[in-house]
Length: 317
Image (tube, rainbow, N blue to C red; front, side, top):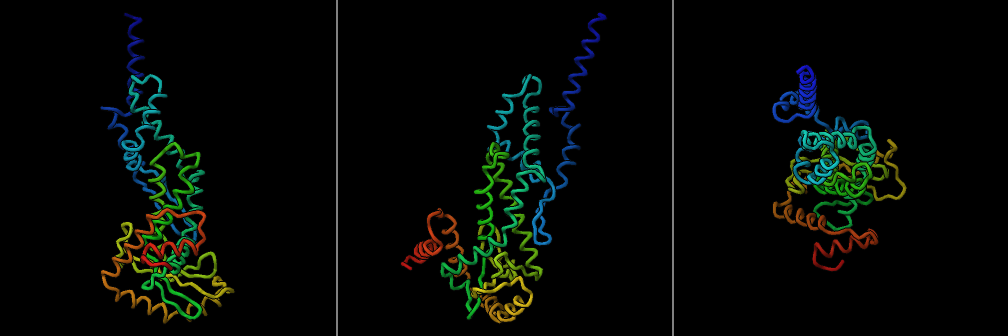
């Protein structure tokens, strides 16, 4: 009997430790407070000093739970196969190991987050690219021209879709996150949405932004116009200079440019408010068609604009 007691005590100690480390059953209540504390600080995308920053961990507990019960089931099975002593709370241990691996791969300041922020900082350039695309496709309701400038209406849904596609195309196959199929796309979609919201909030507070080309300015935004594109309403107003030699980062040139388009800008806002609901729906549907198209890498911008115009109007350019 003397030899049995130490073995029993040791077994109970090991079992108690396992319950504390791998919450399953009665041990779940012990870990609940810790998990809740981890989940309180939700991550956000912040726009400050013309740069984006991800504050907090981009993979929330809810996002991980949704992934691990969906696209991540194969990753969980793989983690379980490599777990020793699977009979001893193997599922919980495998899940926690996978969770730690995910948090390490997507950690703030890591390679993935740094690459994501670098791409997000291209968002003003994405707004410009969308504006140029709208100009070339001939959406007359959305473009107003002047002798040396143009005002372009850029729906937020178009911008949000383009930055999301760009992020997924550039970052979904990074070695650090390639194995987390589905989760990476969720994180990148979240980052794209958060960044677009942060930029629009900045612009909507009457804060204009010159893009990196120096030939265009994001003038303002209207968050109420009902485009119903990609689950978001509203649009940006983009002012594009048609002059070859212009640098709007120069304060004097920018003031001259903004003074010259003031009436043009006001006229475009009034014109858009007079747009009929059926015209807005038709324009939004045209954008939806464009988003479903596969972009051809071999096309020049002019060829792509011609093909898009033919698809949306039914007539050759």
